[in-house]
Image (tube, rainbow, N blue to C red; front, side):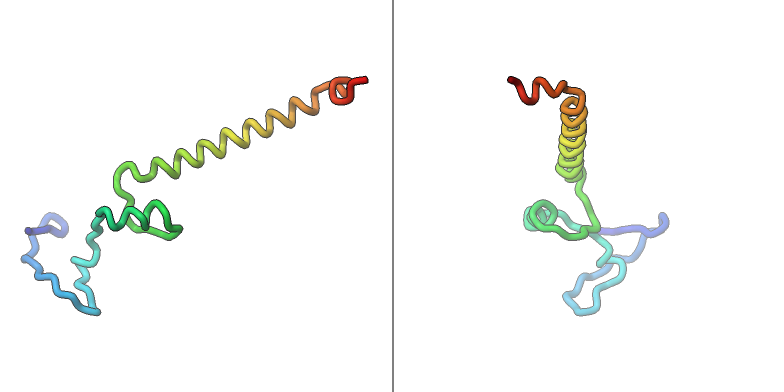
Length: 89
């Protein structure tokens, strides 16, 4: 497999398991089923988000925004309600 940098094809690199990773090869991100738990279950900073994996975060933020809006509306309605309804005789 070949790759390019700035549009220039680079020579084939041979991967070796080493404590000093290759500067180009170590920049590649791979997403597989083993990585799923890291992205979904664990709280950490990831450098690569596969397409569509941002949906759960956006959905959670949207749900929180709806909850906050409903709570604010509920408080406003409670303030506008006549006290006679809060403590009926």
